Image (cartoon, rainbow, N blue to C red; front, side, top):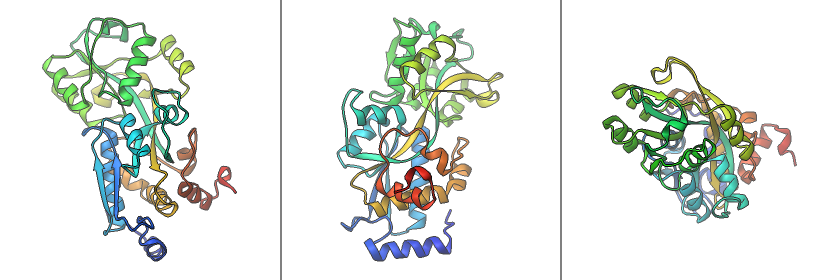
Length: 318
């Protein structure tokens, strides 16, 4: 996947002279850690591909992809300075930064908004479960503890007035296996669509996705404006009809300890390799600078600002 241009290589060489390498801080560290989420999810897929791109551009760089519980854990790791990059949902990032969630956190900032994660509620096609209220009294996985999926699932169940569900905290792969074996009745995943775990579930048993629409969806959007209406097209996972649901944006975040030079290089690498990401990720990954900066409510990293300024985005003018 080594597709660096001569111009890019010269830029990296210049950064190396200035600060011991384009992705090396002035402290001389040659390592980056990216917080992703569980294996099988889009966060993990993105982090793995992006880590490969970063190391292809700088073969002396070491990039480690950490498997985590997802957004909430990633934000804590960033705030502690234990990782340098991470994926997180926009709603959780805002709540952590502004202290409106369970814990106020600091020490992180935005690089870019990447794609929409769809809230997907997966049931077996033969389950007889047709709508969210039907989950009352059922065994339902709401995602790993502390994940964005867990928060979204709780909000969705509450919006629909679902009580009495036996909620369980499984990662996506385990939830898929237990749905296939009939040990649970449904699982939630807030994730880019299509997703490989859900695709595998569909191949094994056939699935349906429950819609999140109507008054309940409007109630959720009013309570949390980070929710946006989105559609999972017919044909995805073998679905015969499109499914209306809600989604949230996935963000690429950086530790504030990441130098300006490092963060600017991360941003430029992201946009220079958008075509590579589109080809290798399971989702329809489409990204440009205008889309990537819209709707972010937390500060941008100084290095990201410098990149966007170099591209002439008016909101980043000095």
